View 1 (tube, rainbow, N blue to C red):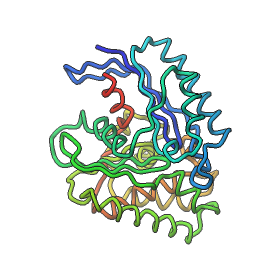
View 2: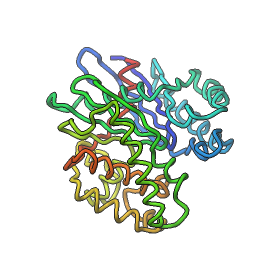
View 3: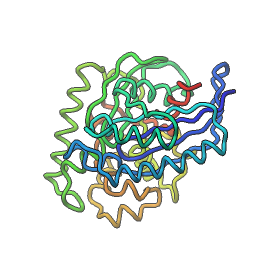
View 4: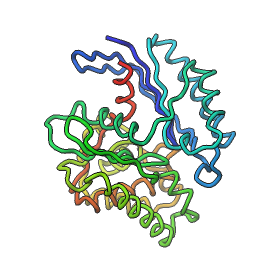
Length: 304
């Protein structure tokens, strides 16, 4: 086995996975998996730049992760950065900071690469070989990937829970016209995705990332966040619609009081849930299979 470390730095969160990987058996033994909400994409949609305070939050998380990686003795590290750092004019500041702390340059990957990693991480352990649509709803973008054992078509579009919230939401809870504006953006993005990805043809919808897992935790009525209970849970369209409606009508304090809610998702979860609901409406999916394994696991396999 090879001990590897993978870091996924997105628009809203930065996550670490340290695992022992055996490519011969396909086994990935998790040693440490953690997430910190850093909101790296704060204001990027408006300013085109990474905010100084967002960079410092991210670098603080990197310092914590560096200590974990050293303690566990990972032999290889890969750091992948996604939507926010693709969009920023000052991304060189971000690259230098990460290199100084972790000794590796962050790879600012394309949306297609992001989709490949997400698909691998989410589907490697699922049984069967039916056509699947994997959707990774991030902070700044959402990836759509269709395939069986390998990616057959993929598209990344600029709809994510942070981007949509910053662009449209001014009220708490969001006003009807704000929700309508989010829906319009998502509908346009889905039209764009459908130009190259047959999103309605797959038999199984697999949902990834924090918006999806949070909706699942609420739908399951969990008293605390439980990744084992959420992983591979099947959540019906009706329950997703109920949870989305509740989140969009709740105040900040009411959302914050939900047991499975991470503090960093309180302000953006309504937009994320709405993206998931719109995808299910467009594709006709009657349920979503929720995966706790995603782009992070795909990055780890790429290192191994």
